[in-house]
Amino acid sequence: MNSKINHQKSKIDRALALLELDDRFEHMTASEIKSEIVDGKPKRVQGHLLSDLFQEYMENGDLKEGTKAIYRSTLKKIEAFGLGLRIESLSLKWLRSFDQYLARTQSANGRSIYLRSLRAVCNYARHNDIHFSYPFENFQIKQEPTRKRSIALDELRRFMDFPTTPANQKYRDYFFLSFYLIGINSKDLLLAKKSQVVNGRLEYVREKTNKKYSIKIEPEAWTLIDRYSGSGDFLLEAMEHCKYYRSFAHEWNDALKTIGETVEVPIISDNLFAEPVIEKKIKPIIPGISTYFARHTWATIAAELDISSDIIAQALGHSNINRTTMIYIKPNQEKVDEANRRVIDFLLDK
Image 1 (cartoon, rainbow, N blue to C red):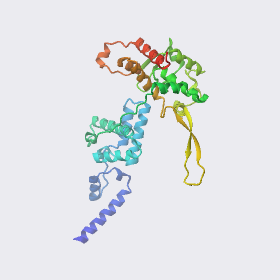
Image 2 (tube, rainbow, N blue to C red):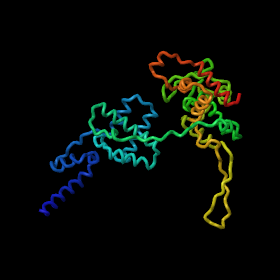
Image 3 (cartoon, rainbow, N blue to C red):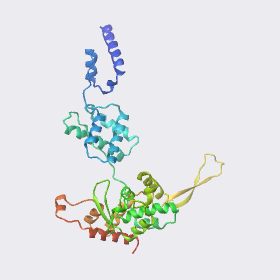
Image 4 (tube, helix red, strand yellow):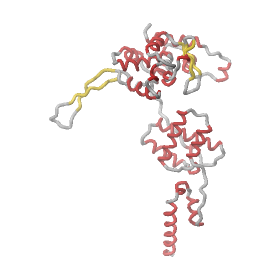
């Protein structure tokens, strides 16, 4: 009996070894492998590859290019973790393992972006009557509170007046131009055209949310626009020297972090008899500052001035009022203009 069992096991091992060389093996379930070995006939693998579903979801959904890039990045992570995964093979165990895999290189918030993208595709599959074990019913996507990005008023004033290089001066001016325009997104600012300035207002559609904005250009903003005016169609000259707005935005964020005091830091050597080496480093006034800080800081100062949350929400393009209620309320642009003037005056101590 043992001899027969060993003989049968050897046949199965040989069949498995041959099947592993087949491209289909990665996509087969245990029952499909068993059926193929027992019957001795190739069996077509049934199911839906996640890669196909991701592609279908991106093509059928009304997604912006930036959002599509996130889904493509998510698919790459999934493929790196386990090639050729079918949605029918998803399980809670796999999802937890995938989360642990992401945790090696991603923060909780970074992992949540990938996991939410996967969940959206799974929901799409369910809505299209694809039957599989939905793993998100017993899995919670963890997320940490977003780090506060507002700047204290005294720090912001010090940042504004601190002596710096001409190059950094330009990037700092762009930061405050964003602030004077109620924290306009860097992409919307850099790609703004002169034709979008109508009757002293910047009229634009925010790229991220597709919402219309109309911001009164205050004198402080006009000063900076005139200083860095574009020679062609662009409102500002930044895009005349960069092919992609992200290139300038990257340099912009890096430069903001180099505005601060130069301090001497001793480098301790392992050699006890070596002379200490002094290295000069920049101690930024606002560590971790980026263009996003302008928007958050504007909102924080507005709140400190007791400007109503409804006006702040309207200024930022948010809505903390019930949608049905908003139908009967005409947005008051004059109050938004007044709020922006008060915030700027408070910053400049007028």
